[in-house]
Amino acid sequence: MSAMAEEIIHNETIDTLLNRRSIRAFEPEPLDEATIATLETCAQHAASSQFLNDWSAIRVADSALKEKLAEIAHQPYVATAPLLYVFVLDEYRNAQIAKRKGVDVYSDDFTLRNSYRFSQAQNDAVLALHAMETAAESLGLGCVILGSVLGDIPELIKLLELPEYTYPVLGLAIGKPAQSPALKPRMPRDDQFFEDGYCDDPDLMLERLDHFDAEVHKYYDLRDTSRPVDAFSDQIANQATNRSVLKNGFEHAKQQGFVLDK
Image 1 (cartoon, rainbow, N blue to C red):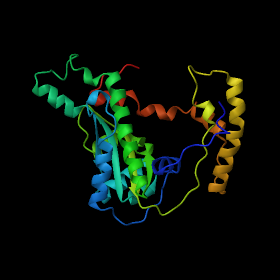
Image 2 (cartoon, rainbow, N blue to C red):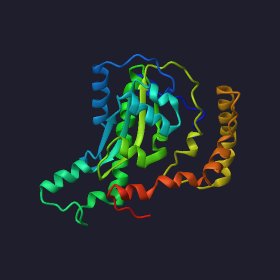
Image 3 (cartoon, helix red, strand yellow):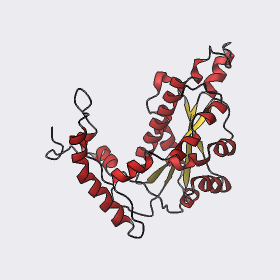
Image 4 (cartoon, rainbow, N blue to C red):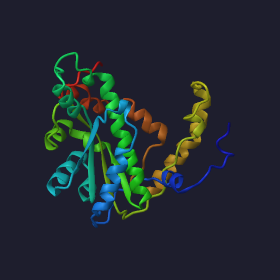
């Protein structure tokens, strides 16, 4: 099936999703309480594995705390976001429920702290964040998802006073956009959607990615001519040997009480 020759259906929801882009400059205008309530309620309506509701979100309002998160992220614009959240996977609340029902939450009987539940709770937090992001964009707001706030996880845990059985997942900055960046290109659909099984023909896959490489390179060149960026394939190759991303892995999660298998 060729993705190139097909047209897609459009409506307001689809166009909101198709036009999403990361906004890193915001108008200083604060968001009203009705907007905040709407966004948070939409996040709560995202799917939840086994209906455990095992995520929470910290709304960061204190300007000094925003500045500290911006320092962790090495991104000054984080401090300027009118609305800033850090989503966390959260089994602490469920631990309190289980403890009241007589479960020893420090024993092997408490299975909500194992690797499977950790990953599922992380998924739930991401689903909730994405629901909030889409709702915000449908209201004409701009957003940027912040993996950068995980640059110093122990410090982030300390700043947000996260208890045991919680772990930060992602940040989300929201506000009225003060910029209109170009849409980032997407790889060929046939390289991400397969029928009845994975297509592992590397020659076919890489041949189609050559054009995508050129598109990505052009996108970054046009976005900022003073900061050339590698083609997509070069970026992947560089990240494939970047060991700095490993430093924030299992040990910090274990310190929060989770029992994870490497």
